[in-house]
Length: 275
Image (tube, rainbow, N blue to C red; front, side):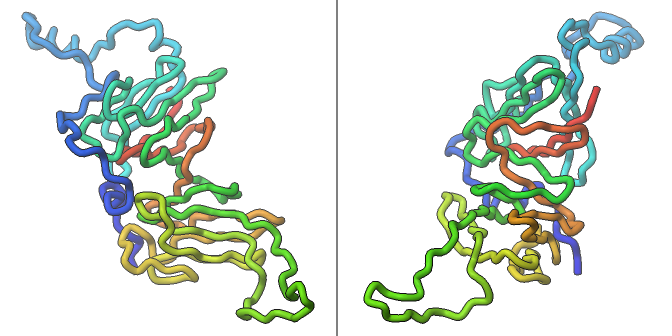
C-alpha cells in the first residue's frame, strides 16, 4: 500500500478553475530574487554585489520568513516578512505568482501583530489553508483538504422527538446505530455537495484511499489510511494518520502562524520560519 502521490499539481482536478485568459508570464517574487542589471565591474566585484544585501531599515526588523517549497517539500526560495502586512496573489501583491491559476489576484495577507505572524484570506476563490501539526478540534463549517477532497464539517442540532405523529401514531424509520451528531460533506469545485458522511458521537471515522470507513479509491493523492475523525468530550477532532500529503484546514478570520507552520495558497506551499 503506497502512501499517495505528492499533493502539488494534483489539486487541479478539485480546486476551482482560474479566470479565463489569465496572463502566463514568468513568475516574479518580490523580495526573493536579488538585484539584477549590467555592472561594468570585474567578475569579483560582480560576485560581491550579488552576495551583498541592499540596506533596508525594514529588513532589519523582520522576524519571520516565508519559504516556498517544491513538491518534495524542499525549499525553492524565501522572502522575509519585512512589513506589517504582506499580500500574496496572482497580480498587484507584494508576492506575485502570475502563472499560478489557482491563486486569486489578491489571495491572502500575512500580518504581523506584536511580533506574531497571522494569515488572513482575502475572499479568494480557492481559500487559504493551514496544515495541521497535531490533532485539532473542528468548528462548525470548517473545510478540510484531505488528499484532493474538500470536506466540510457540519454540526447538527439535537434531533427532536419525531417518533409520534400529531395524532399519536407511532412512526417507524430506518434503523441506525445512533442519531447523527454531525456530517462531512464532499464539495465540488462550485461548492455544491456531492456526497455526505454521517457522524455519531462515538468511536472514530477513518478516511482513506483503500482502508477505513469513507473511501476514495480514485484519489491518488490520498494515503491508504489518511485521517481519523473522533468524537471527544462533545467535540470532533481530526487527526493525521501519518499521511504523505497531510491535512489542511481552510483559514477563516486571522489565523496565528507558529514557526514551522505550512500554508497552502493557490498551488504554493509556504513554510513559516523565524529569521
